Length: 328
Image (tube, rainbow, N blue to C red; front, side, top):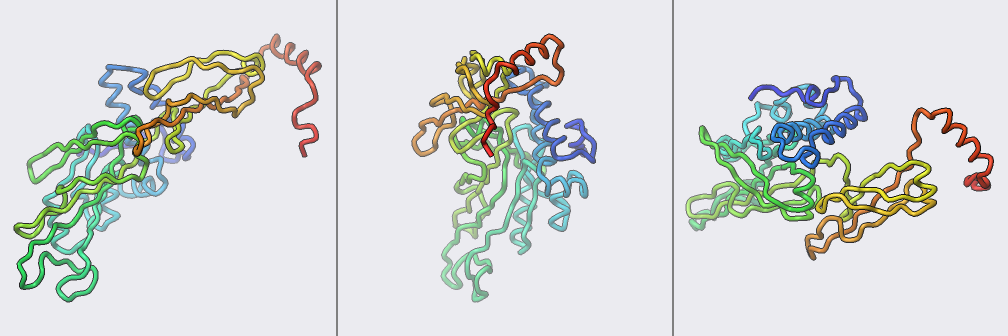
């Protein structure tokens, strides 16, 4: 696989600050978001690349490793070349399970996967042939009873909308020269850090025994303008000072129902939350939806015309006492 320059993908320099990287990501995510450019395959591909780049450069630890080792930074961190990795449905990364199994049975712990990809860990059976906790064993000595194979865990990053609304997420798995696609069902409302278990998809066992499980730790990619608080969604919406003072109607996005009109009452202050009931994220246990909150942000233009300055001056003369008077 050719090296990918995540800095170039986001259009920032290698010395860019975390805030510059975040701003570049938000700008590009808005530009290429499927809601903005529906049906545009090139934009959808670019949106995935932007998400992948931010999942690395937006994480301080991963960024340091990427700066040091490039695209193979996870393999270098674990003391060897990357031989097993995974990622999303674009097939950019793959999991080499044949190499992975060799690492496990050889007794060496292995980690692989770039940002948004996979991490594999060894999970030894407790106890063993008299070796104490942590040793592997695949059957009782002399009994011939088959043992379940070891579980395999790795991390996978899914789009914000898939985590919120549920859906399918594809992974590419490579065994030797053969590449196989696995589709994983993501439940609606899964939280960042949640685990999905795929029974029988883990480490093979001794002959006759069941295979272990595949445990996916889900990481949710950031959204260009939504963010979550549990099952609630928040979106910042800018308004002008006159809109805040006089009241207005504004159009705001929702995650699953398109745009809706929201009334901003007269005298609304910056930071006010306007509730949209039932337009949040499904709650996994009940499938009822949380709420969406429109967070009002009063925005003053950087440059003010002479006419506007005159009006502001006249307003200042008739305004009541400043709201901070006596506050301290």
